Image (cartoon, rainbow, N blue to C red; front, side, top):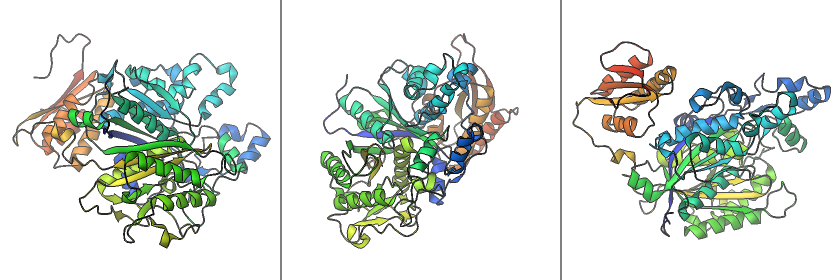
Length: 544
């Protein structure tokens, strides 16, 4: 076991996400945030149809429940064969397990880490979720329940399924601290990395609303917004709107990421998980506990709270929850700041709904994107919450697409991300911009002279998958005509797992590469593109 240095930090090296209805990547998510989008819609027609007609009382309960929120378009579709799962087993698989599998693969690819290269290693998997709707729904139908339901309908399966598929031997656990789940998972993973217990961690958070049961319960408690919108820090906040989605980040010790040439998207400088303790009720927030949490996280990290530029806040969307959070933020991060440098405050929940177990990782992904792009998207709201004196608070709501505050080159950009669970668990993560601008995968590839032909290998589990991958890479290159061909070739050759269906393009310019990729995607005969399926016994022949 390798012990980390006392001053070691943890890096985020890869990210992947799915948010409603069709935000399929971090790039999609960023464009959506910049445009100030909202995913709130009516419930899909077929989602809870069986429950609406199951019993007269069920019909009445649903009629009185908020049926608006942020819903994913496709929670049934799944390339089970890719993950070695039979059709019968796939029928019993919680969609949250499916999303964790898919996004782990994508996030590792984003980090430049071939997923299959991790076999037998100590990579840890930490998956946060607090809704087991799908499992309960299946187990209600006792005659149809079979052996595959044992692992397919459980929380632990969300993490364990990934470890099994990739043959990972590190810690593998589902984390349920309600809406604080994914930041709790990140905190646990960070501890494992800094102790030397694990060299790599996959952290995810998810929420899928397979049944209406929790909506009915929350609606009865008066917790849900009548129009399905989370109006975080808004004077008209009236409850939260539920949302579906999933996000995964890959973590590595910063020194290891730089050594291995992984892209350092952000640095996790500190984290903490605490409890509200006893408040006015188990679901009621505790402002003094939140204030204590913030002070502890920044003191442990050795970072002055007044140097934090932005906080991606929890933003419950309720008058009491927002008021307690803003007061705690003002007392800790709003104190001791120059009048012209307030701490900017925002929340992603008005955009994509409350993802519950996945809300924290959604906030992390948003904040990393904002830090890297140097802009902070608007936090959707009307009139600001009137529970605090904004002018004297040291805080300011982000009311438009604003530049990241200048740090004067004396320190990295800094941001906090908060998540609060309905059971009282509260968590906070401190993120920093990577100060080594030259770190990452771009440094790891030699750059040949312009005009030199380069081989660009691709692979997938099926012919259809190869066509889809070729089209995606072609789109990526077209959007980035100045990207280094050598870096693209290096990534495709050495930083992706090579599957059975193979293809390759030989090109000496971005235009030629796109043309060859389009040939592969559309199965056209071309001089620069070839494809075939690898043999189980290929005699060691490779591309020449």
